[in-house]
Length: 176
Image (cartoon, rainbow, N blue to C red):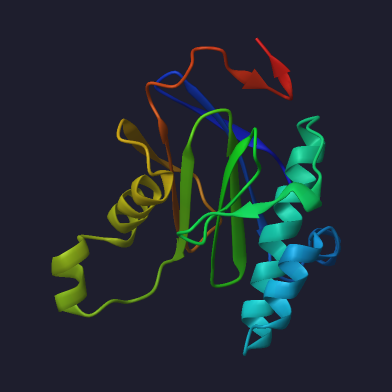
C-alpha cells in the first residue's frame, strides 16, 4: 500500500488502493468490517469489505493517526465515520478497494472499466464521469469539487472534497 495525496481547493486528501487478495491489508481490518464481510453472500464481496476496512486502518496508522475501531459509528445513510475525525470514505470494485482520508468531508469512488450498454453510456457519459459524480455524492458537502486520480490499470477513480475546507491541511498526521 502506498499513500498518495491530492489537493482539492484548500482540502488535502490522502488516498490509497489495495487488492482484495492482499492478506496483509485484510488482516488489519477492524471488527466492524469483519462483521460486514461475514454477512456477504459472495466470497469476493467479503474480501473487498475486508480490504476496505484494512486499508483504512493501515492508512490511519501510516498517517500517524490513532485509530480506535471501537469509536467507529455509522450514520443514518450507512456511511461509517469517526467522531472528531478524520473524515474518510471507502469504495471498492472488481478486485480493488480504495480509501480516502482528509480533515474535511471527502468522498471517493473506484470502478472497474467494463463494456457498457449504449443506453447506460448515454446516461452516465463514461465510467470516469460516473466516478466523479459518485465521489461528489459520497462527499456530501455542498462545495465539493471532484478530480480524477490515477487508478490501477483497468479502473477509473475519483476523489471529492469540500473545497471550502479549513485552510489548515494535514500532511502525514501533522497539522501545517
